[in-house]
Image (cartoon, rainbow, N blue to C red):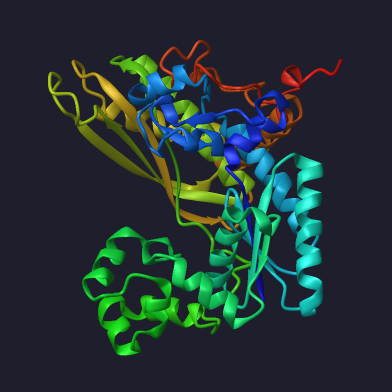
Length: 421
């Protein structure tokens, strides 16, 4: 048995956790550069604000209904996610963190009468300790658990927990679920199924295997088997080592100078290097790219990238900046207005697996540089992100991504802790 725990309207819930006055009011969260709607409260959904709507297009609705608007605060959301996942890990022998706001739990060790009470206990604990409301779906397979979770969210009588414990419940839910709403199907495959007269999840379950395989391939057949109650997708409690680390953002304003671009690339390098260290990885290849954006009719388009091998592989911020800045300089061209830059680290290996010479001066310098980076990480964890940084990252960062409505970093910066009283 699997339990899928899904945080309700996660980004919005994170904002509400530290500002109770937002409860019951329409709230939305914007994407990078405050461009589009990426999260909505139930109240915002009810007044017609759609996922992905450009902010400027719904400005009238937002003003009319006094909708609270926030820029994305990914530092806060990431930290709150870690807290939720830490709590969940206490309730199951195995857990698969599926996304920033979802996790599958292994319930196979529980007796049937214990599953719902434990799910209610999980829901209560997460709510009390983090302020984040969650919905929980329980079923024999991961695909059915997704479906049960959907019911837990939409049915107010469920109390946020729904268990598929008999065939009648499953059949009723399958009959009401459109194919586009099935995990792993989506809109495009749903259109293909509709042309063949398959409109609901129940239609899929009742279809012949040969027909499903012809329309959806082996992965689609696996989904149908899961809907029938046969587990085909195992719990992935040990995700495969990632193959790349990328840091890329659009600028908050037009950028045309090498100086501004160098600051941005240095910052992106530092962010990506910190991720490498967090996952105990080193990079063997780095790529830097520049992009002016394709939607500017009055400006010439330019995109270019350059790569360089890193020998030996490293995760030291200082060492990696020494690679990325020369690459940037090589692809930079004057007389262009740049909208985006980024770096990609690939050929990742476990940190410490690289061969270093015992008496090699460069190896000794690299070891010191790695220790320095780890010390900076420790300081920033204690005193807040950006407390210590490389000078090449710049100070004012006038080019930085627009985040005019960002909430405080309540959980990661001492200076922004909420005050009681």
